[in-house]
Every structure is written in structure tokens, then in C-alpha cells.
Length: 80
Image (cartoon, rainbow, N blue to C red; front, side, top):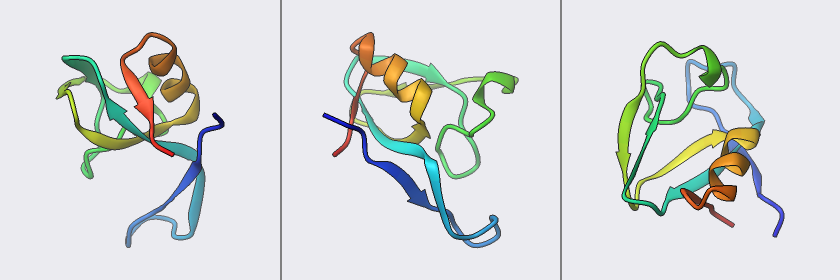
């Protein structure tokens, strides 16, 4: 199944549609991820200084390449 890319960015952002993120759901007990103020994984997640524990069932946006990696390890499901 191909991931559905993109999300609407909020007011105060650059506006428009970002095609570099997908909706994910945490399916393992928990995973540590860097989160932005909106509770999503930022596009520059590799440079984040800290990570937060995200519990099973949480729904958030994440960059496509990170989502694919987490899905391959059974930690997330990419939302259709």
C-alpha cells in the first residue's frame, strides 16, 4: 500500500500543502520521537535535540522516510 503523502500546514506556517509527511499511528508500546509544538515529527527530525515518548495509539504526522523506516520495524502503521 502506498502512503498518502501530505498534510495541511497550520496558520503561521508557510501555508499550503506539504507533500513530505504522512499520517502515522503508533502500534508498539511506545517509541521515542522528536516532536514539534503541534505534536508532529518535524521535517528536520534528524537534527532534533530531544525526543519524547509517544505511546501506542497516538496519531501524528511524520516525514515519509522516517514513517517508512518505523513501519518496516513494526513500530507504526501508515494511515491510509
